Image 1 (spheres, one colour):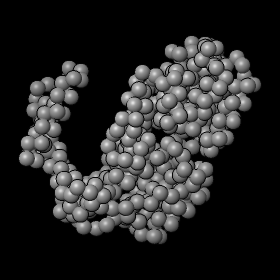
Image 2 (image 1 turned 180 degrees about the vertical axis):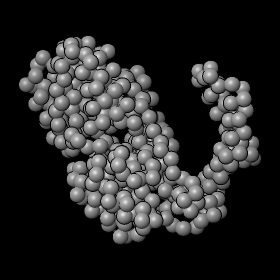
Image 3 (image 1 turned 135 degrees about the vertical axis):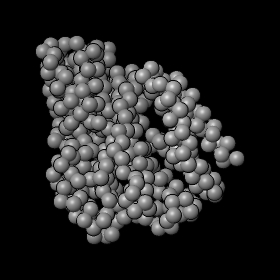
Image 4 (image 1 turned 120 degrees about the vertical axis):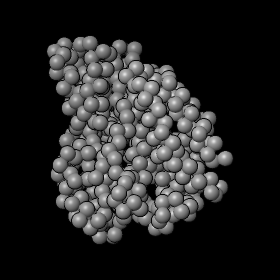
Length: 371
């Protein structure tokens, strides 16, 4: 029965490929791909079916020992820069779901307000506490280099998620290509605004998870002299972000566009657009991520776009990679993963608002349900 299901899954993958435009791929490619899926992916499908189907309780994962040859109850630590920010609700669900699947556990720690010293202390505590793996939001270019090196010397694997630092020794990065996404945002701003003053809001300037985005956007906008830009720091706390953006709009009635590079500021831009009826005045707006407020106001046409980077995967995949790296005794597991760049508008956001799920942080329940 499991073989039939796996075969159906392979057929489904091939059908999906057929819908994509891939003129450069020969029939030989598709034969090789199916062989790879049957050998590697097919085995993974079978393994996951065995793991997920062995018991009705999704929190039971004793079968992972039989699949991966290890019965260890591994413990991982996530070090985050804004531990209570709503953006990371699906990230935490992703981490928990991966732990439930694999029979491990995780701790969520760090700082509530992007205090790097607090994050470094949390990382050091994870090391001395004997964590089996650490995932760090590498929001500073240098602060985490020494702790990462210390962890690796102690045979504790480290991955970066959500934010990366080029000089860090982490074994993999799971998150968006931040600079490239900023460039795409810059192109979208040019198309929307054309000319005039625009403001770009950033919670914490210099932070490795946000600064590359604004740098990417500005690299595009500087080539268009008809658009003038102002960058405004809003702070890591959502209430302060809203207050800062509202004050900016009050003092800049000529602004033609309001854009943001973080979840809290994007939500606040949408709320400010609605409060001051800026859509009726022709103001354009957009940003990043999908808080429930952002989703609802995007559907109400208070924003032109938001960018989804799949925060659920930024929790799920670090656990998966750290686990596989451990149970394979470093032979497998580590891979850089770009979790994506997906522009959503008032039409394409409809499925997000029409459902509730852990994948988007809108429900604690498993699966996807109609809202």
